[in-house]
Length: 147
Image (tube, rainbow, N blue to C red):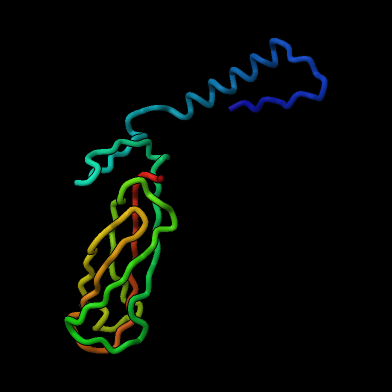
């Protein structure tokens, strides 16, 4: 794309300069196309289907430590929550996965359940299936329409 030179102070704006501005704007408009593949759809029970330009969606991700070398008891759940760094217009689509940061057998045998998602937080429960010492984090990804 051509760069338009900045005018000097006091320079009269002539037709060729205005033509250069219009050409640069048109070049930019063709690069930012409105093709259908630039749109994404998010569907939930609360909001139905929302179509939005992919560039207008917000993607946020984080990690939350649940256990840090703690002795856990099988089937005794631990509740947790993660506050999104951005606010969403509707509850976003959230994915949550456990990460066995301790690297032992106990961290390999857990169930993580996403309990509730609001416009600003995700609530989850971790249930270990074995008793023992565990270091475990959860990784969370949220995709939605920003506020």
